[in-house]
Length: 189
Image (cartoon, rainbow, N blue to C red; front, side, top):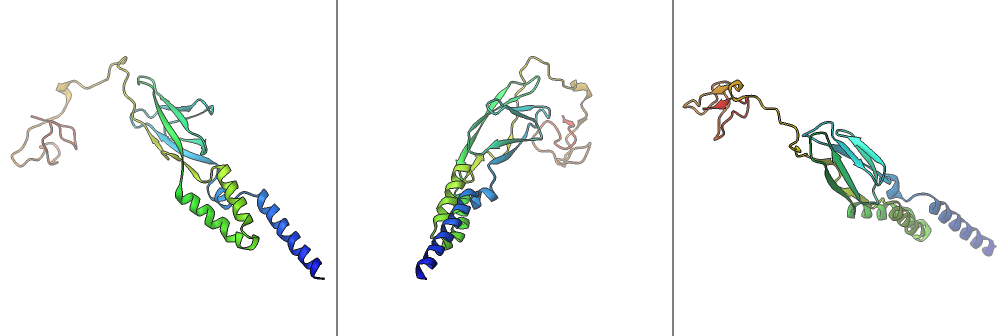
C-alpha cells in the first residue's frame, strides 16, 4: 500500500512540474515580452520614428511595440530637419528579477522548488527580467538649413517699455533680464 501511495505522490509531482513547465513564469504574466515605447518630437509633430531592423515605424505621439530582449536603433526623420538616430537598449531590471523569483517561489514550496526554477527560466528566456531604456523617446530635431525659417519682421513684434517697477507694460508680467516678455512676447526696449 505504501508503494502505491509513494508512486501516486511522485506521479502528482511530475504532473505538476510538467504543467508548470509548459506555462509561462509569473514574471512573464506581469511583464509581457513586448514593451510599448511612446515616441514624440516636440519640434516637429509629424516626425517619423522607424526601426528598420524590425520593419516597424510610428509617428510622433504614437508608440513603438518592441521586443524587450533586443537593442534597437531608432531613426527619426522629418522634412526640413536633419535625420537623427537614437539607441534603445535592453537592460536587466533588479525589481523584475526579484518579482519573478518571489512569485515563482510561492508555488515552488509545493514542488520542491522545481517549478520555481522552471518559472524563472521561462521568465529569463522570454525577457520578463528586461526593460527597454529609455522607456519613452522625446527627440528634438535640428533644422537642416535648406528651408528658410519663417520669422516675423521686427517691426511687427509688440514692444513694451520697461517700467520702473520691473513689469511688462503690455501684460503686467515681471520682466527679468531678457529682451522679450516671457508671457506675451513683447520686446522690451
